[in-house]
Structures are given as structure tokens and as C-alpha cells.
Amino acid sequence: MTSPSAKALNAIIPRIPTAPYEAHQKARTFAARYAKAAQYDTAIDVLFQSARELMKNGQTGSGTDLAGFLLDVYDQKGESVNEESRGRLTQLIALAGPEGSWRKTIIDKSIAWSMKHGPCPGGDPDLNHYVGELLFKEGVFDAAEPYLLTSGRRDSARLLAEMFIQWSAAGGSPGAFAIRGTLPYLLNGNILAARTFITHYTSAVAKTLGTPSSTSPIAVGTDEVVLTKDALVNFSQMAVLTCQRANGDKSKVMRESWVRLCGTYQSKGGLLTSPEVRRVLNEIATLYFAIPPPRNQAANPFGDMFSSLFGGPGTSPSVPRVLTPGVDGDEETAVGLD
Image (cartoon, rainbow, N blue to C red):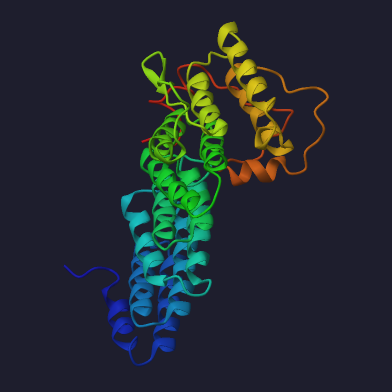
């Protein structure tokens, strides 16, 4: 049976090698006609196949233009995020290649679509993971970081740990990377990702950092804290385990544990005393332990930017987030987990 898009594609695809501009224009014309008639699936097929063939023939700009049109039709149709709709986009992202800004244009618009038509406010976890992994493999660590943080999948957390291990080996501070991986996931209420990240990260860096003499791992319930010579790595492990056992304002013991943990490590100075990190720790205190933010805390113009870098939106102080024990904070039901 001939597909509804066959007539259009037969007029477009053969022309791409010899007359790419003409093929591109035909694709736009056919797709616009189908979309206007609410034949969205036919328009999507024409745009996807035409964009893919244009890119395969080195016409990345024209292919990117059709990819953008494809996403417009996704939006018109109200296309949900699923394996098929995501798969078209990942193919086009891969074909666009790293040169120039074409690929970033497709990525940005794809993530925006998935934010609007999927259940996750940061965009589809699988799409974010795909982009993060792609950039990681290309060695573009700083660009990969926000996608892996936003994804929140266990695979993303493990990949982020591997990336930070490589990054810190090139001269970065292991402790600073431990904080960069742990706090964003906690800020997003994603205990499982935070735990996955810090477990993998610590098991690797502890071999290089070494452990204090005559020190064995500390058992916390069924978990362990592997003490290292880096205070921030130690803090990150204990922060995850403390938040994991949080119960809002119902557990005085865990609230006091969090206050004591932060106070002990902040007394040592360093990164944990910076205004940006202090604000994030205060937000985590409110989120997990229902501890109100300090009244005398000065406004921090970098706070929202810091939270955004950590993979989550800035939070209005007038609408504090609080995790409901066993719902948002539970590792099996937290948003963004696989």
C-alpha cells in the first residue's frame, strides 16, 4: 500500500543530489499544504525524510530548516514524546554533526518541544541523556553537563560521574566535582540519581585521593560512607544519605543531622561557604527538612543562575518546594527517574 507521503517524497528525494535548494522548497510547500489540511502525520513524514536526505547529502542548513518545521508541526499536532517522535529527532541531531550551530538549533528546539508536550519540566529524560552522551563522547564536557543533570536517569548519573572523573583527572578539584554532581540532583528531588552519581564517583576518586589512616568505611544503615582525604567528597556522600532519610519536619533527628552536617563542613571554609552554594544548601534544607531559609540571608542574584546550571529552575522564595515523604522523595517514584 502506498503511503500518503509517497507522492510528495517521489517529487523531492530524487532531486536532492542535483537540485537541493529546489528539493528543500518542494518539501516546505508539500508539508505546509498537508499541515494546513490537518494531515499532520503526512507532513511529518515528508519533513523528516526530506531533512534526513538533505543532511546525508551535506545540505545541513536546509535539513536543519526542515527539522525546525517538523517541530512546528509536532507542536501544531500536539505530538507527544514517545519512542518514534524522539527517534526522528535523535537521527537528525546525529546527522547535523558538531560543526557550526545547526545541531544546537535542533537540540534547543527539540528540548523545548519535549518540555511542552512531555511530563518533565526540564524536557524528556531520554532526549537529554542522548544529547549529554553525544557531547560527552565528543569531549565537550561543559556542554554535556547540564543535559546529564537534567535527564536525571541512573545511566545519566553514572555517565556524569565518569565524565567528572576524567575532568578532575585533567586538573580539576575532585571535591568541587562531587558537589557539582550531587547538589543539582538533590535540588531536583532526585535522590536516586544523586546516590548513583556519588557512589560511582567516590569509588573511582577514592583510589587516587586515598583515605585517612586507620579509617574504615562508615556504615549508615545499609549504606556506606567511604571516607577520603577530600572533605567535599565526604560531605557529598553524607548529604545524600541524610536527605535520603529526610521526613520533612516530622523527623527532628534528621533535621538536626542536616544542620550539624552543614555546620561542621562549612566551618572548614572553602566552596561550601560561597554564597551560591549556601543558597542551594538552604533550598535543600527547606525541600527535604522543611527548614525555613534564614531571614537575614541576603538576596543572591546568582542563585537562580546557579540553580539553572544545576539542572533545575530557579525557585521563587514565596512558593517553597517541600518533598512529600514516600512520593517526591522516594527513589521509585521521583520525577525523572527510570
